[in-house]
Length: 182
Length: 235
Picture 1 (cartoon, rainbow over the protein chains, first blue to last red):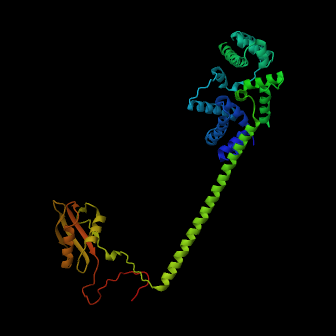
Picture 2 (picture 1 turned 135 degrees about the vertical axis):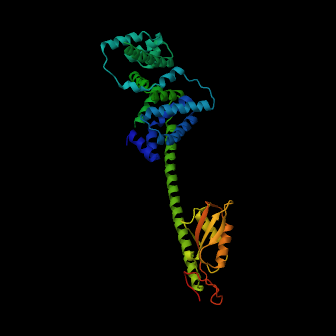
Picture 3 (picture 1 turned 120 degrees about the vertical axis):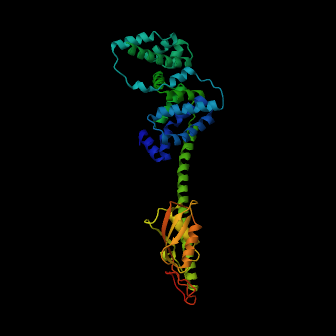
């Protein structure tokens, strides 16, 4: 059974072994996600199990289309709720999380690029700030990894990462605006 | 599995075991896949992937799934047992009841007299529509019920037709019997009408039938035998 079939099977029968099969491939990724927010090995493990417990109920009632991204958002919210509950302050990079709440819904439509699209992209590149421009160019055009970019520019590795994430987002917004505004 | 593959990539990435191209590839994937990016961030915070920890987690999940299935089976068997128990209980009670009745019936012969309320044993009324418009306030049914409860001595019984008017107080007045019924019958009828429910209308004309009694001659029989008897009649 593939993921969709497992989901449907579980929704209709409530067969826990189906849910287990569905959940288990994501557990190691989920553990990483939970650790990112909870920053404690035991709590993260418990969170992974607790999320499974909640899915037992939720997945019988909700229609879930894209299980992977749904699970990601659900788990992230679960962890953030945990943090809020014990009122522990953690530094969560707003920029980072802004990026992550965007889904890759539109990325599949890789339309053919025409000459004027490249011109538009070049125009949009100019709207980015220096860091973003630099990092995006090195990453996407020269295909360098974060570490190399950090070495080349002297920026911190995390700074490189968020510059690329935010630069990418800004480019996308800019491109869409130009396309509509034209 | 794809899962393990992804995990070992994360592991290699964090520990700098990847070539630049591989690192770029993973970074590019993570840009399109926030889930992956979050996981990478998490493992980087933890300084690596702990395979043992993850296999423990996998075991926890397996145990969780198996437990529920086992519980369900246990419950299922419990229900089955309950059903068998209940069935056995019912059988036992039935058996006891059968034994009891057999025993009981064998020893004593029982007589059951069942008297049905036959129309002949009841006081019935029949409003004569040609003679008036009076109706009991509570309805004919209630009035008939009242008569049956309150009748005492109507002599030999039988039919009587009475005419009456409804007084200001709603009670029958000027009650007159038609024909020549027995005095006891007339008296009882008057008594019943006057102490009964109130009426509406102005004039009434009723036929009341009292059960016939043959107790003129006490020597004959003091016992009124119900017309129908069920069961064994003992003489």
